[in-house]
Length: 178
Length: 155
Image (cartoon, rainbow over all chains, first blue to last red):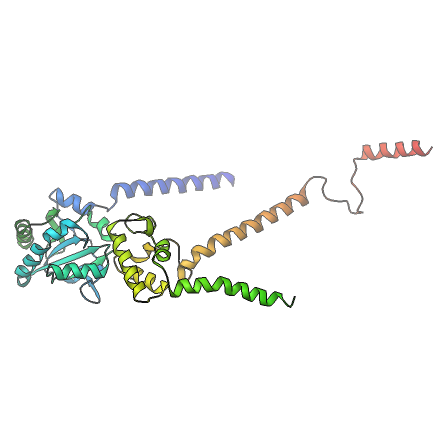
């Protein structure tokens, strides 16, 4: 009886150890950014988050069929202010051509976020997140921008730091070509 | 005895009054001491991160608007970019109440187990149990020797 209990305990410990090793090896944290930076195309992690710019929620899956420019930002991030106007202008330019800009406002208060949006005339949808998405997408700082094609796949390039008009146009054209 | 009830009521009032005042008219420091910065995970009153500064400004503005402490804290927690991670201690209602009750239950269970174990140990100690007739238990050889000694003493 005692041996059986010892065997069960040892098996449980080994199973937990195996689970830990599997999680470390296959962990999703940072996988999207890592793969895309290697030139790979990966399925975009789906999410539903509350809107900052209006009431209700928005699901990424509802944008399937359109190219999505996914931008992670914060209202108190200085580099985000440098790209904000460019993002707003580029979003307006592409909005009638099957391209949607979607901002993910990370760990921010609604008031300052709305102020930021008014300041830079941002009219595209913004959702709020409490950092849970950064792990899934492998975001390591702000701002970062991903391009998602019509089939919901993240395609290269992935912009780390402030986006420029050129980098945005290049990403959008590549996503549209897929 | 007649004085006990009024004294208890006075004590309860004395304790409840500051808590009520703190809830109705909180100070910046009181609220900051109960919250943590979600970015650096330190108490809000010790943090100077950008999000902590935003939270402090929010608290300041809403104290000025006359909001109660719990209303301000709940409004901050309802911000989709923050959530319950801002609370330094678990809430005392809903599911979070378990965080307070489970350790108390564990302590109570441990105390009962300890008491039960001590009682069982004292009962099962070799030679501790009294004999059926209530007298002391003696080794037969020792008992025989005591009898002999008594007999010699009486002789």
